[in-house]
Amino acid sequence: MARNGTYDVAQICLNGHIINGSAKMDPIHNKDFCPKCGSKTITNCLNCNLWIEGDFYITLTNQFTGTQSLRTTGRFALPLFCPKCGVPFPWTEKKIEVSKNLISELSELTQEEKELLVKDVDIIIRDTPETIFSANRIKKILPKIGKVIRDLIVDISSETAKKIILPFSDN
Image (cartoon, rainbow, N blue to C red; front, side, top):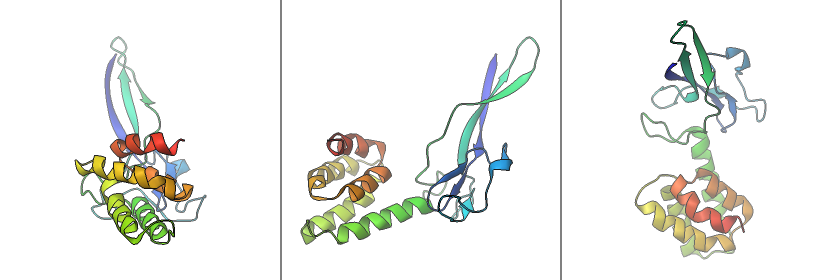
């Protein structure tokens, strides 16, 4: 059987709840507003209007009969940034903002630690050469901060940062 595939469009609320991974192929599940939080839903980047990649479908063609069938490869991961313009999606921006606000209110940290942690949050959301350094610094500060901030930071972290931070946060 020959295989090729295509992405469907995802519908996600502004707070990052996935509404429908197949908004075009299965529109019956689309919603104007999120049933979990009431926020407006989107299918396109608010900055450049590129559609948000959803479920990936493989087209299977039977070489003997020529018949085709579509099969999804499974659930997609919630994207943090638009792959066309690089702008963070609204849910990413909100998590970054909330993380920074919570960090600024931590009495357990010195002012210098707060400033470094806020800068590090901006770095660990992207997978860059600086990510390793910032993730290691965050890992050292984690024992002083609460689980809510720790979970927010891990949630928005790049895969590289998660590999560094998660061994500690699981303890």
